[in-house]
Image (cartoon, rainbow, N blue to C red; front, side):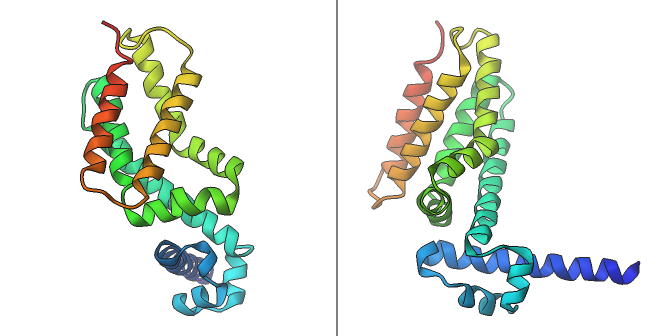
Length: 197
């Protein structure tokens, strides 16, 4: 039994080494420029070890993307939880998403390569599972509290999510001074337009 625990720990260490190296290389150069041989060499494992954990490069990338999305989600949740009122939570969470998406690693993996490597439908499903559900929950609470006019939440959540994803992609382009501040200000005006009264 003890040896099984050691093996499980070794398997997890190998998996984590592959994720770390894959993430480092995908973020630095992009999915298309990275080969499996380079990943396994950098992780210090064999191709057989990679195939034990992942069906191939695309599945490793998907696991890296999930990890990045979870980290961004945790940042957004922490920013939102720092506020007591639901409106402050929504605004802070949306702002933090934009801030997190300016990280070059997040941009490359989550916003640039994610949709192209996995396809729009799979990428969108992952995005919805990791963050859109939380956005819909926050908007529902605000509608129920009368802070936002009563309306179907699903279209509003998709519109807001799409706007933030598009802004994040725009921010991933050539940087110009003030872009993030201007985008945050535009987001604040957009959100303010949702409030009743």
